[in-house]
Image (cartoon, rainbow, N blue to C red; front, side, top):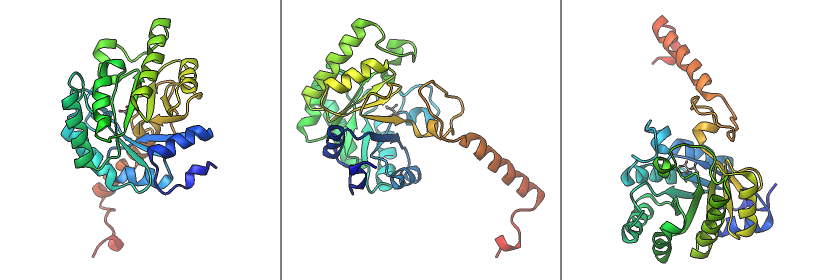
Length: 271
Ligand code: KIV
């Protein structure tokens, strides 16, 4: 068992200590109070209020449509369910790119209105000015490199990133730039295992992977995917711990049958 699994509150400093001690960091997404309560009770280190809420909660094809107000709504619901985990909130598309003043005011709104503990932004050197400005306000920033879903229309597909030498070199430079700017951790999404392990070795802050192999400092998955609630998404990197889609379907079928047949409610379930 990891030494830090007993800490009462996970902070960015705890995550750094975990990396230094070689203890793996656990992270899952969360979008609502009830799920956050269960994930936090299980002892997760970090809950990411991901902009993947745009897909799994709102049914959009991409993460682009979700708004700052909607992210704040999800984040404040998660914060109310959490005692221990660090809550990191994704800054949505359009709330930070290209204008560092707007980036700072978006981050301040997230912290003030949701009670989250940190923000996450997608991108490398091109968003350094926004990251630096947010950090000046004392807001911890998590970076996100590799497959960055807010840029899906630039990439064109969700295939593995940085297989080519040029892109791999750029990714390492970006990771070092994020570390130098003061990011407390970096997510690496869907890149080759060897490259991710190299970044985790060369960069001193925690590297959290999704589809980035086991050589990094921690792992993150989308909670609906790992529970198998979403049965339309089965990438190679995903481990499904349940098939809740089928389980829930069975319960809904039984309920419909019970109501239709008059079996529910029975006497014991009535006043
Ligand atoms: O929005 C999200 O769920 C994410 C994770 C995939 C890292 O950014």
